[in-house]
Amino acid sequence: MVTPSNITFDDSLWPLLIVRFSGTPNKQQFEEYMAMRGRYLARNQKHALIYDTVRFNVLNPEQRQRQIDWLKQHKELLGKLSLGSALVITSPVIRLSLSLVLQFSQASAPYHAARSMPDAASWCAGRLASAGLLTEARRVRTHFGLAPRQGTA
Image 1 (cartoon, one colour):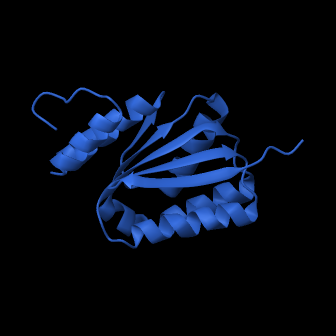
Image 2 (tube, rainbow, N blue to C red):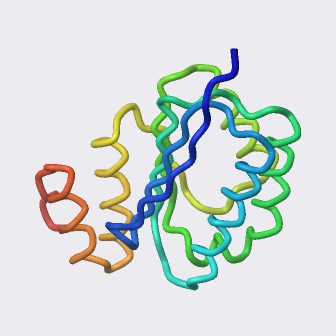
């Protein structure tokens, strides 16, 4: 049985971008995801990301390699613009797959393996606040019902 796949982008809290994965993407869907991620990177604005992988199945080896290559290709720009990525991961298999991608891509931006969306949002709000984006961090915390951290937004 083939599990339906969907990858959605939510930029309503920009400069926080939330990417939600479900199922296993086919080649076209994965390429569309990579292109869309590239368009957000082309905005040339600092941002943080939440990857929600709770309903996600693993990437196939070709997709993992494609992601590694993309991360290497965009390493300099990611290092300059990405404040970090929080990955909501509940599956040990997805956690292992992610660690392989990050190891082989030599990711330059910080990341956080979160166990829930509020955990991920809190971490990203902290990254935004650390970059001086206090209003944006406060908006993220408010949206997710999180208490402001003392001394930050």
